[in-house]
Length: 552
Image (tube, rainbow, N blue to C red):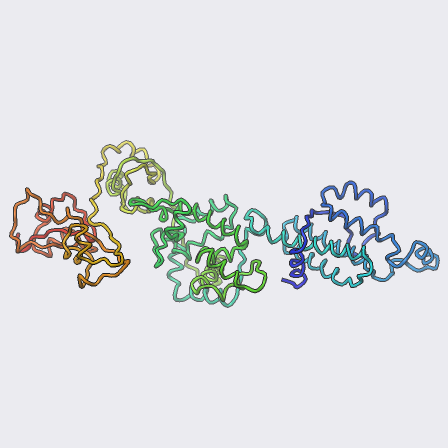
């Protein structure tokens, strides 16, 4: 930012003035100065929308033109006319400098009202340079006009920058497409090592981006932000980061609660494209109100507003909206995040320029919504509607167990299938979810495995097996342990007794099924189900079951 503008901003710390546009000043060197009659007219009408500070300043400027303070009395002026000297060729007086500065100030107002803030800043900068050239401090009226105009310029500059915190105004709808060494480096990554990721993410964007664009336009946000999920998740609804951020927009649990995204046993709205998009829009607007420019907003979206504010507070200069001043002080992942996003925008804007000629997009997902109050598996619904189960899973990614919850839920169905669904709703079987096979216990300071086993009334060896512990004595404070429920290992009284030496306790591992377990232990699925008194074929990871071996 020009040095003169910075000085003007500094001046606002000591004064507060308000001002509004006024179309009173002529361009320097054009036309004649207003007469007393014109001044009267200006005071009554043209200044009707101006503040007292602007009115006083302009009135003062007009009065100074006719006063001897300019170095020429009316008698002197008349004498010069008689002698044939053109009064227009008089020296460039301080009052003329004030008039020229006022002209540029008025030009800035017109540019600002026309939605051209950058041009307005340039005119204000020119106005400020002119008043800085006034060195005469002996004339109190000139000095006062100079000071008033300096404060008006400062006020306008801050108004222009403050306006950028409102997404509905002018240029704030645009994300500055910077190009520098950091952005160029990320473009080269997309062209080489991450090329497949970019192509796949771009393809998936077709499913969800039309809805995102529509909602962002309603909210007055830059449409370019609709590409943010490409960087966040590759447009994958079930993307999970190391920090446990989930979904298209990669919300962590605390932020999800903050923006009313449901998270329970059955549903996680972070994986819902529509609800998570609404939450993301709200969050982005909050961040923009806080920081005022989109590059800093993107950094805060990635690492949290608290971390960005901490970096800003550590700066020794006034911070406005230059993200690249913060860049070296941000965490590495966040520092890459913004250039990575800008690189994606550059490629998307002109894919052929960067060698991406094979980009294609999937068709948008379209659906009908039906409220259901019944727990059903998506597989049963798909069978009833004679459609692929994956189609329903893609339309309802927020369902954690591929089944509707035990409370009212808006189910997404393919177009023109809602009537068939409602007509056959009674025939779709009610789903009874399996009981949880274990509870989770967080180890507290001083606890032992034997004490925990006694508390839950289960053998120590069951806890050891459920958690793949190498030793019963090696647990640590804060560790989460799965405690098998007693009902999962008790033999039913009406179950035929078996030889104890041929029955073992088996902990279900990821990927296990009853058929695989039966094959492994040379038994049958029916015998395992009878032995454990279970009817469903569903198993939970960590569940403990009895398995009878060496029989057929």
